[in-house]
Length: 96
Image 1 (tube, rainbow, N blue to C red):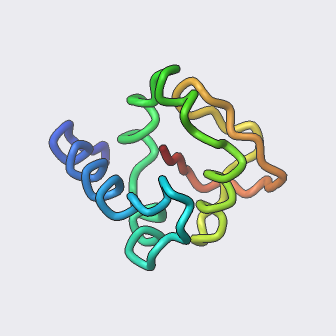
Image 2 (image 1 turned 45 degrees about the horizontal axis):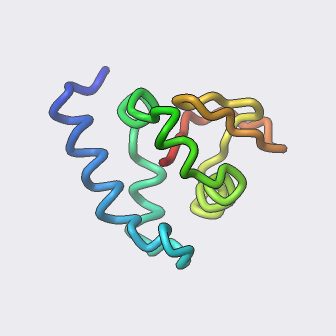
């Protein structure tokens, strides 16, 4: 079932609040990892603008997401960034 705009807004808020430490490259907390695993890609990827994408270290983002137990498909596109990963596993994911 697709998320409503309000549900997506809340998912994004929880993700940002739970993962702020990643901005200064601190390891993700257990709660941050949980948010990375449960946040719906369709709620996050549409808001990744080229300006926001320019601020994202793609290799670091993929490493964190994978470290939290969620795989990033090879050549997965989210927003205006292409996440290049060596894995071929398919669950939907995107962080920003």
